[in-house]
Amino acid sequence: MEHMVDLDAVDDEASTIIASPQRTGFLPIVTNWFDRVFVAIYLFVALELFWMRFLEQSIPLSVCHVLAIALGALIVWRG
Amino acid sequence: MRSNRVGWLLLAPTIAILGIFGIVPFLYVLYVAFHQWNPFGANPYMIYNGANNFRRLVFDNEFLTSIAFTLKFAFFAVLSEVVLGYFLAQLFMKEFPGRGLFRTIHTLPLIVAPIVVGSVWRLMTTPSIGIIPYLLKSWFGYDLNIGRDATMAFALTVIMDIWHWTPLVTLTLLAALVSLPKEPFEQAQIDGANRWQIFWHVTLPMIRPAILATVFIRLMDALRTVDEVWMLTGGGPGAATRYLGLHIWKIVFPKTDYGYGSATSVIVLYLTLVMCWLLYVALVARRGQKRAS
Image (tube, rainbow over all chains, first blue to last red; front, side, top):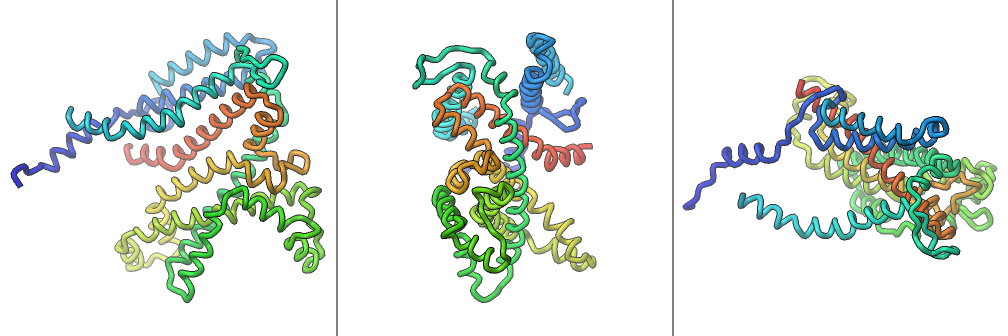
C-alpha cells in the first residue's frame, strides 16, 4: 500500500506512447505510416504484375519501376 | 523507459520464435522465388533469374484458373461456415435436452486431422462403396461420381470444408455471444425492437470483432487448403478442384521446381494479405473514419 498508482496518469502515458499519428489523405480511410507503406508496397507489386502481363511487350519494365516507386512515395506522403 | 525495456523483454521469446519459424523462412522463400532451382534437375544449383518466375506466373493459365477456383471455394466455404456457425451458436445459447451431448458431437470434426477427413469423405463418396452415392441413387436416382462431375466435386470439397470447420466458427461466435452484456438487449426490447432489429443493431455490431477474427482465420485457411482436397479429389476432375495450395504442392513436389513454386507461394501470400486487408478496411477502418469525422 506504500505506492499508490495513479491509473489515469498511467493511461494517459500509455496512450501517448502507443498512439501512432493517424490522418486522412486522399486514401478513403484513416491511415498511419505503416498502413501507407503497406498500401504502397501492395500497389507496387500489383502494378509490376499487371505490367508484366499486359504492357511489357511494348513498354519496358523499368518504366513501371519508376511509376510504381513514384506512386508509392505519393501514397506514403499524401495518402 | 523501464516499462519499455520490460515490455520488449517479455516480447522477446515471441519475437524470436516468430523470427525463426516465420520471418526467416519467408525471406528464404522470397530469395528462392527470384532463382531457378531444381535440385533434382540437370543443374541442381540455384541460378538467379530476376523476375522471370513471376513473369512466367502471370501467363500461367493453370495458375490463374486455380486462383479463380480457390476464390470461389473460399467464398462459398467461409460464407456458409459463418452463417451456419452463427445459427448453431444461437442454438447452443438456448437450453434444450441433450445440449451438452450435441455440442460435444458437433465439435468432434475439429479434432480430426485434415488428411483423415479427406480419406473419410473419399470413402463416403467413392461410387461403388460410398454411402453418399448409394443414398443419392436410391432416394433421388442421382448418379454421383466426383471423378467425372466437376461441379459435384467442387461442391463436395466445399461441403467437406464446412463439415470440418463450422464447429470452430460456432465455438468462437458462441464465446462472443456468451460474453455479451444483457442490458443492451433488454433496452432494445423495452424500446420495442423486433428480433431482426435486435440482431442487426445490437448483436451484430457487438460480435463484429469475433466475426472478423473468425473470417480472417477461415479465409486464410481456405486459401491454403491442400490435404483434404488432395485426398478427396486429387485436384480433379481435370483441374476443377486444383486449388492454389494443391497447385503449389504439384509444382514443388512432383515437379521439384522450387523457384517457380516459391514465386507462386509468395503471390498466394500476397493475395491472402490483400484480401484480409480489404476485408479489414471494409469492416473496421471505414467505421473508424466515420467515427473520426
